[in-house]
Amino acid sequence: NSATAQDSVDLYRGLGGRSISPDFLAKGGTELAPMSTTSDLKVALQYSASEHAVILRLRSKTFMDRGVSIEFLSAYPHEHTESLLPPLTFLDPLRKKDKNGVFKPQKPQVVKVGGATFTFVDMQAHF
Image (cartoon, rainbow, N blue to C red; front, side, top):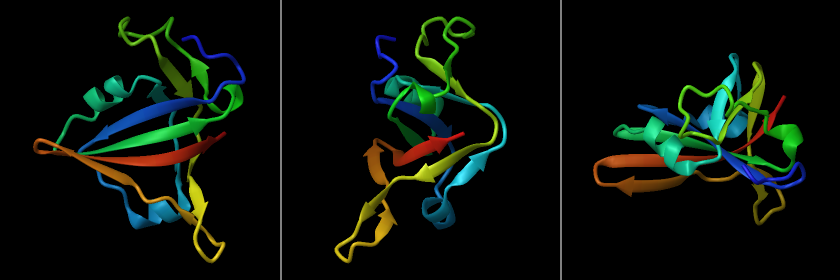
């Protein structure tokens, strides 16, 4: 991975057979266990392959909010972009100001490919 400590990096978490609840979009949620992510969108799409999939796109600003690289431990040597976030990571939906100046969660992006629907949700990880 050629990113430096201060570079912005997008990390992805693919979830197959899932949908996003309005409550999660409004408030976010906490992952109780360590959370594996990848900077390779293709890998996340492969892990989430199902009729209804969710891709969490974690927008990291620096190394301080993207966990630790575990590429040297990965069981999948071709997946050299794997990072692990710690237990109890809070996933906070990114927000934008609406026309009234109120911050509201961004709408997920929905992409349909063949018979599959991928829902992309932009998040910020806090740990």
